[in-house]
Length: 96
Image 1 (cartoon, rainbow, N blue to C red):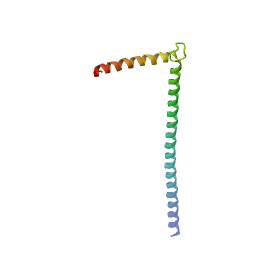
Image 2 (tube, helix red, strand yellow):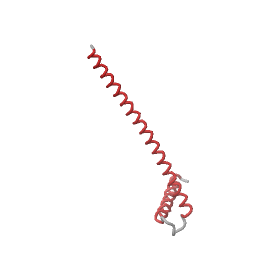
Image 3 (cartoon, helix red, strand yellow):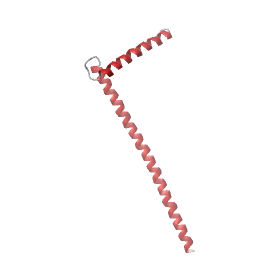
Image 4 (cartoon, rainbow, N blue to C red):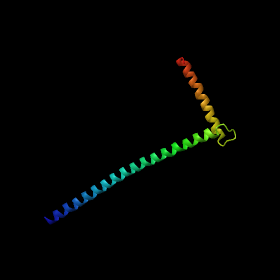
């Protein structure tokens, strides 16, 4: 009977060890998910602030033809002109 008890003890230890390993893996997976979410939040803050820097730069230097990023400045102006034209078409279609 002692040999049988030994088998059950080893089986119990194995089950306990595997359970702890599974719990650790689940905890690690949850922590990784949380950390990735935090990274995503940080990246959104960075993106938002880069956009704000660009907007402020454009407001300050947007009319200076010798400003750096001239290609982008012209692209913004062209896009704004295009958007205004498209909005005017929408307004005409709505009878405004």
